[in-house]
Image 1: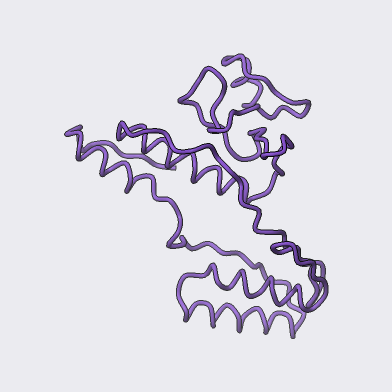
Image 2: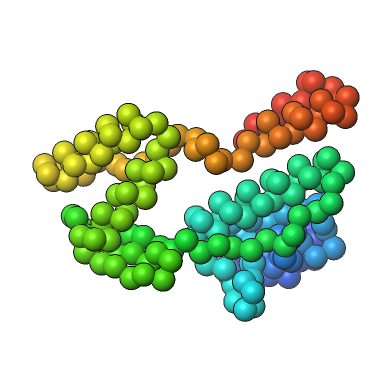
Length: 181
């Protein structure tokens, strides 16, 4: 997809095929085409490429969605995209992890506890947090290798359909518009 998009838009790419984007995460000469995630070559304030991490993609996707909604509302564009590095976490074994959170480096059990706490905080309901914590504890104590997935929608997630519906209702456009991701 990257090669096709780059060819059709004459976009610059790096050696692994990522498309170079401007500070608004758009392709040069194409202000309505946003590129985010692993396909985007976005640079930080020092001119270095942003890493291919989920947080970069999430923040870039949220930025792009907000920018599109503002354009649909005929409002001024938002300021350039800036990535906020929250740190990195990785489980490397049973009750062991590595963490780099806001400049603090941890490893072993303390890092694993940070990983557990942060992941549990992304679960929406308090009862669900307790249930997941109990399930994870049981899996660790019994050496069960269950999946640890967070699949709920968080309250902070950007809802494009909700934002677009306010634009459509204000403009008087047809209510038959349906967007699916």
